[in-house]
Image (cartoon, rainbow, N blue to C red; front, side, top):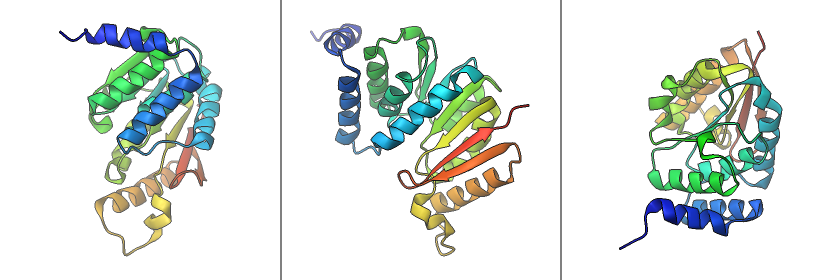
Length: 216
């Protein structure tokens, strides 16, 4: 008979002693499944932003991405131990990888929340105006709704990070009319129209946007 999942997880955690090992395992998982994940420079930027924004919200950080294990590892190493990290991802294998990574870093299980669903389906249930950071890597067609929901749950001064959302600049090509390109283009127009968000577009991955919600 196979060992219980809880016992397997505890054995995995006991074997992990170095944060670098945890990150390496998270990256290996992403590579095995062909998941796009942040490189070291992007991860370090995410960690810096997380460390700066944590005090602004009481409900922690939301990570909505297939590579939640990699992103969560960078974030977890930068924030206080009691910061809740909520991972939203429909694939249970990717969720388990994120859980293993976060618990292997020694985080209390009470600070790790897993939501196995599409982000746009569940983010509306999260507490309004209370999260310090939302990190999203979602399909272009879902970006407008994702931004709307993220804006609703961010605390004043909170940060929204959209990974790979500029599609290598192809959103400016008027001949591209597929759903993802149209959605990504609409998302940029939405952000530009929000007078309470300060935007920065950065050349990380296929284009990152960092948007900070103004203080009241």
